[in-house]
Length: 366
Image 1: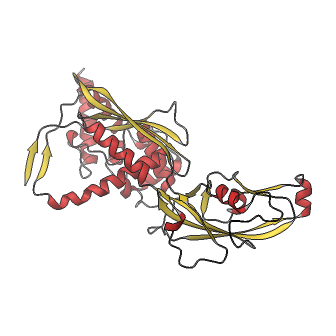
Image 2: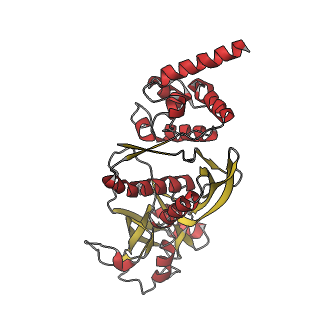
Image 3: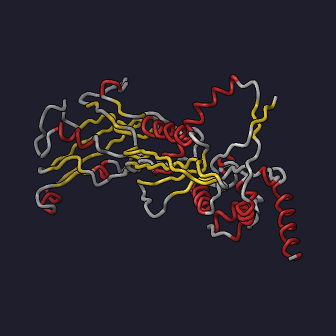
């Protein structure tokens, strides 16, 4: 049974401040929210960002011939305690996968540190062993490959093993559950959280003649294992998933009146929606994929949820990210609600054709 509520403003777009954006920092501006909603959403997102994002991290390592961490190794400048501290600074990124079920199982990464006398002579008697070198054969992308793990001063050939797991937040060594621990394996404390800093602020914004609506400004800084956009997207999905349980107590469905929108804004939005796909700058691959899916206009594109896009033939993450970036530049996004224009996913082609004819008729009358 439907219960009708009054109109309620909600954000229509997320803007990224391009002038300050970097691969690890972004300022997101989301508006408009009803009063108080900016604080509610901003605080919830910030807490999820800081506590609930998962990334891979090294949970243990083993260096051949080293029985424990409280010792020095001949031919290595650093003692094992210092090597442990260096390894804790490793930043690994899980590469995107097209697999339906992406495994979170612990992965083993094995490498051989082979330092010859010739190599020592070439480098002045010291060879720095970096994270990038020992992780060459791993299924992970190394964010800081230049990180020096230890420095070798004598010829040596030793095997080094890493155990990489997935987790959230900071996990101390005692809490790692390892059933098949190897001799000489040293368990590490692991910082899984990719967030360096997450803050939010609320500013006033205008909707029509009212100036007391909320503008949410989110500052997100990561360590590179996730981009700021990925971090915010994942946090929002986690938060929404946590709220799904409240549907169990739903006795009535709310129906909100549509807020009075500015006609000028609607006209500008309709201009974008009626554009053909070949009128925007997309790669040939993305354009061909959309064409084969019988998507001709922007309106048809933004009606489609993100998950459904990946079901199209020959359509991958790269094309999806390109399209999302282009739509964001236009102030649009996938899965938009266009019901105020009478547009649904079922009638979008016919409705856009009608709107184009209506606009054409108006111009001719003028």
